[in-house]
Length: 196
Image (cartoon, rainbow, N blue to C red; front, side):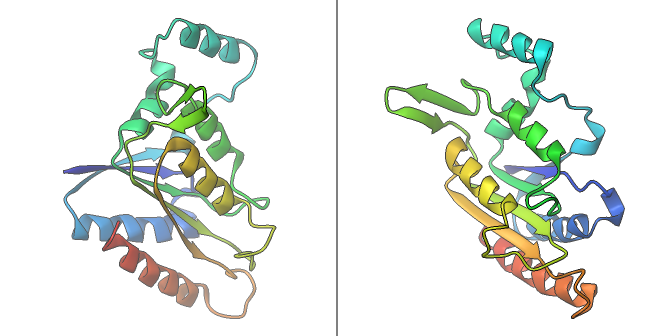
């Protein structure tokens, strides 16, 4: 059985169009493979960004190579997952700050990456990450789309070989119905689930 970590950063929760698309994809994964899916709802976690005392505590623990502290639980779960799904809406040209805070908590040398004379290298077990997002306008392939680009580069940093983005965009343009656009994105998600 493969372990899938589903990182939910859909700020509007059940009212979120991104969550609807992500739930569909996760349901398809359950149908196509022998997976155990663990959902981490970031909105319920009360995470802290790296500042002052919290930052110094992290440095002290890393200097002691004490990776057992509870603050590293996010990094351990991410590093040990076989597959990862991250869902977040397109906000301010990337994604909500909460997802960046989560990524800050993932970046722990000795858990999700290591360093040697040649530089940094990823140590995560996952071989595939899917990023699920929705956008009100049209940004795919433009310099203004930074969310998917950022996630793809983070995959490389963490040593995750495969990256895919499932997206629906133009949802707020009024050119087509939201339902029609989401259904098209769901079809792409259904195809990806077969090879995830």
